[in-house]
Every structure is written in structure tokens, then in C-alpha cells.
Amino acid sequence: MSIICDHVNFTYSRGTADEIQALKDISFSIGDGEFVGIIGATGSGKSTLIQHLNGLLKATSGHIYINGEDIYDRDYSLKELRNKVGLVFQYPEHQLFEETVLRDVCFGPKNQGLSNTEAEMRAYEALQSVNLMEDCYDVSPFDLSGGQKRRAAIAGVLAMKPEILILDEPTAGLDPEGREEILNLLKTLHDEQNITVMLVSHSMEDMADYAERLLVMDKGRIIMNGNPRDVFLNAELLEKTGLSVPQVTYILRELRQKGFDVDISATTVDEAADSIMRALGL
Image (cartoon, rainbow, N blue to C red):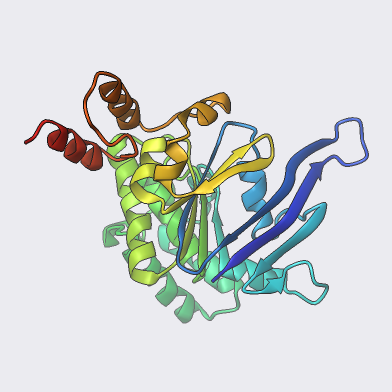
């Protein structure tokens, strides 16, 4: 499933004294089955941008195309759009509200018009895909651990069978183990179900490990669009926007300055270790 943003602009409180232009001439495309990361400092427009992709916000000007169809066409169904594009907000567990996990995950499919049986089948499938233990299905979602709540909330979106999954800081507030579990889950969904994934994150290490391509935002604009290696080579530009690069990149740059022939474009721990071993002749 493809996405095209064509010269999208968005202004909050338009025509008032509080007017703020949050998106400025945003253009990019995302192909079917990509895993794309969106990075930028707080206030750069990341959350505003992703809320346009399933119609929660409407552009002040410009166009958004999903599978070649303009979502702003008068006869385009926003309900159908939201069935195709699943959006997981920050702290999605705050959206849990039903008496049991299973009922909560059934909510979306039922709203799509599925029968109780069909909705439960969707819910079971989604809960299994996020590796939530079956003994959790009939308990209150509020009795789950933080990581389990996050999985249950993601399952609620997956049960609606989206073709694009957009997540806004899905690992926020989780411990390192919980963060890794969620990110590995997203990678599995992407690899095995060919779901297009868009991930907003402040962690450059996570982006280096999981994203195939990065969109870098600053003050409402996209200032870089490329693979993580190329993006992280521009450390100075990223730092000017309030971002950084993976820690291993800083280490490799320091080693290069000390005369070691290391690959400063390496972005992951494994790549950095291989480069250092080669430089040492090991």
C-alpha cells in the first residue's frame, strides 16, 4: 500500500492570533511494504504529519494519496481510509477501556460491521500476533504490565487489518526489555505480513536497527529523506536540529580521528564491531 504526500501544508488556529504553521510544503512517497522512521526534535511536526495520513487532520493545502487515490476527494471514504491506515498514539494503553482484553481488541472489528464471531476471530489472531499470552485475554487490561498493555493496544489496531501501521513513540516509557520486545514485534509484522510500517521515535539507535529509510523533520519541514547510513553521516546537520546520531557513530568518528581505518557510516553495534575488528586486523 503506497502513500504520497504532495506539497502538504497545515496551520493550527488558522486566521487567529494563535496561528501556527506546523507543516510546510511536505512532499514524500512511501512504497508498499516499507519500514520508514520519522525523526525530529519536539515540535518539529512529526505527530501532526502522521495524523494527516489517516484523515484525523486535514491539510490546509496540498494533497495526500493512498494507493493513488486522493483522500480529499469529495467521495473518498475516510472510514475506509482508517480501516486501511492504523494509527497507534503515544501511550496507546491510555485508549484501553473495556472490561477484558479480548473485548477491547474486538471493539475495532465490531465498529467495522463484523459479527461477534468474526470480531472475536480477528481479536484472537491479533492477540496471537503480538505474542500476548492467552491467560491475559479474559482479564482487565488495567491489570496487565506496561509492556502487555502496549501489546494489547497494538493488537486492537491490528485486529482491524490495516495495510499501513503508523506508530507514534510506541516504546515511550518502557524498560529496555519491553522496548526491544515491541520493536521486534513490529519487525516481525513487517517481515511476515508485509505491513507498511511508519515509526516515530526519538531513539537513533532504534532507527538504525529497524528502519529502512528515515524522514528527518525540522520546524515543519522534511530536511532529509534517505537510508539511515546516509542520514547519520550528516551528524552536524542533525545536531543543529536538536537530534543526534547513534552512539556507535560517535565512537567510530573518534577512532577515525585517532588514525584507525574504521567505517564511520556504520550505524549499528554489529556493524561497528565488525568495522573495528577489521581495523585491528582481527
